[in-house]
Image 1 (cartoon, rainbow, N blue to C red):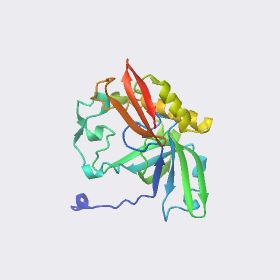
Image 2 (tube, rainbow, N blue to C red; image 1 turned 135 degrees about the vertical axis):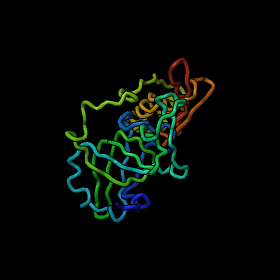
Image 3 (cartoon, helix red, strand yellow; image 1 turned 90 degrees about the vertical axis):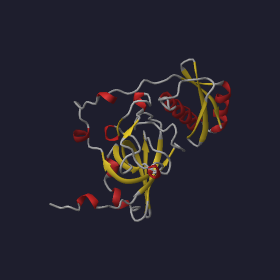
Image 4 (cartoon, rainbow, N blue to C red; image 1 turned 120 degrees about the horizontal axis):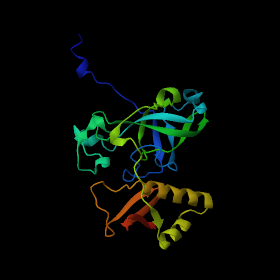
Length: 240
């Protein structure tokens, strides 16, 4: 029996970096796919930035990403965490959740692969439905295989169904700012839909009670978006 296996250490080298519409950790969706309008791309790093490494991958509609929770690594890990699904008050074992404060700081997500852009020394994988903050290091990419990865009878009562969404509307001033934020109609429509889809997930800390006196803000799509809770719905107050 090998008595040293538990002390062996391994090195993981990022093969790419995420360029995301989420400029900070706050308001990033808690699961992939909840915000279909969320888009970005993976830029492969040397020596992985060669077209040969993704040959055939463009036949996939979806891919698995394994990545590092790089903004949490310096905080260490925790035996138990407070999942938002439980209101941020009840604790569960970290391995029974998808919390960020994990022993090795690794996460994984399924995202839609929309296109692959390559040159002789550059590879970019354009993706949608991501739940990753800008700058996230990607340590592996795998094709999503439907017959093996989609298990129809899988069950997890803690998070079996999608969370309910919150109604979102824009103040008149915010609508005007949205018009100024994006010159072309397509970009403006995308930004508006991104904001709606993100805020529908109720991104505030789970232990916060909705209050019109508290304003929240997050960097979405290159803009600082502000909102508050009013009459059981979310009101977008500014897009700066």
